[in-house]
Image 1 (cartoon, one colour):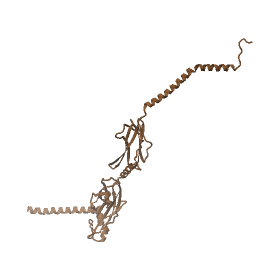
Image 2 (cartoon, rainbow, N blue to C red):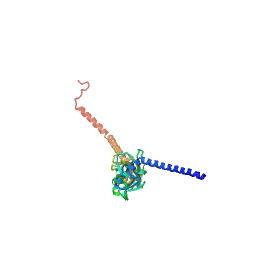
Image 3 (cartoon, one colour):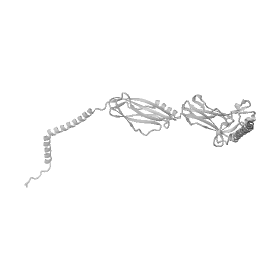
Length: 372
């Protein structure tokens, strides 16, 4: 009796549980059909969730329009992965811009036109179904594909993005008819600074030629200069010119001298160099070329050795002897004048008096005192 009495109650609970499950399923299906995706499915597919259609009329109804947007860095770094994405938005009004045809299942691929220039790794499945979409925040749903692209060389990298609906008509995949969307070409620049950096480095091979006089004079200043053309890359490439004394050189003092007004298309530096003694002056002038590529630094050092003969400094004693010689000459002249004056003083006095008397006798004679 007790067992028999429990059976009707258990059967009743099982029935209520089955009704609850059925109600939950019904609510779930209703919610799916009332969602943007569910509305799209209902319009596009006979059973709202399949890639298989049975005739061409239903096949034509298996497509709908979706908005497409792509996202990727404008510039890539060689050998560093960058994320590329493609997103379709459906189940609501289309956004301005590019649109594509979509079906319940859609395949997306991203490829490099030249496979040797980039390595492309998918981060999501190639095929995605519309019922996998997530809310886009504007009343629709969205699906996103992702790839990691690693460039293998600098320059322009060309990629092609293709998103095609996947539909089976009867028991055949209608590949030709299903390829409804054109491929999208994506051009990105890889290492824009690398090409500029290489341009300046190439220029340095031929056009970086510091100037130095063939001879120095010890203890005297000599000017050494250096120039490097930038070839219009000064906004992306930094160049610093330096100079140091070389091994085996006579002692040198080096001071940087302010150059004239800088040129926007070249780097110019000047130094004042003084050798301490005669011998051989050895210098090394270097151009340090650098740039930034993302978080990566590129640097190239180009060196030019310089050599000059150092003549001895002018001796102090020749100068002293020259001055002494001049003084001796002056003293000799003074001594000669003194001797001349001493020896000829009396004759000169007699001559002067004679001249005075002669000058006096030529005029009228004055009357003598008391003469009548």
